[in-house]
Length: 146
Length: 244
Image (cartoon, rainbow over all chains, first blue to last red; front, side, top):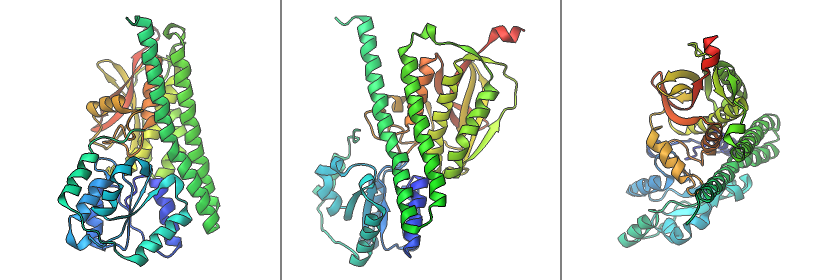
């Protein structure tokens, strides 16, 4: 779980542990890569707004390793998905994001269901091209507005 | 041609709109925390612990709104009519630490009050100064656990600088620079994360503090104290009382 807010992280951790899952949390993209290497998790939850490196940068790093292509990723963010409207195909394609969950609209029950579905479904494999990658990078050059 | 007063009014309006947007974005965090804590309590049947945290998070949200409203009220007043008084920095820092203690506990941040050194009173608007420091404190307490800082410790301290006396909050973070603050001032209200080197969220507490301090004739600046970086209010010593 890549979750920068300590209070929300505690809530989500309690939820998952109560439901029988084991949770490891990271607050930085770099630490998250080390954690993935150490644990090979069944599913990764990613907040996009992080200090220093964003969640998107983590996803690029994650998907650059062939052995981590199959790990399901759920974006669970305070940024509304409408801000990624133009890049959603690339998120689900190139970065193999299974679902985009907007935090204010995602109840704990819904989050738990998504996590369970992701674990059950295993991986989603979508082939992408280099031009997709360039287009997505270009779409990230402007900061999302409030 | 736009007259100077009309230009100033437009700038003030723009600033207040941007501060409002920044605050609105920031308010999502405590509200989200409250709703999820309540939901967790209902799911697990354990309502005692979440209830305590809900209270604290709601209190943070209310104080931040209060700080914003105070900044608007002070900004609307003529600078000359804002009552400046002799203020003891030690007492303001002590009260700030008291107010920040519950939320620091929730975030696992240790507060350290450093009142060594004698600075005498400063001339300021006590309510404004207090509110600004509390808003700053909220922003830094939220931000600190997300930065991988080696120590989860926030120090409230005062020290002399060449511009006067700085009362501020300091932590073991190396990314807090004058340039980062300058960029944040440019971006707040238009970018979702105006202080990306410091905070994962809107950091509205920093901008509310900035607005309050500006309105009371003080300044917010990046400052360093005992090898720690932080944000502080630059204040002027009360020279009349020091003579006595």
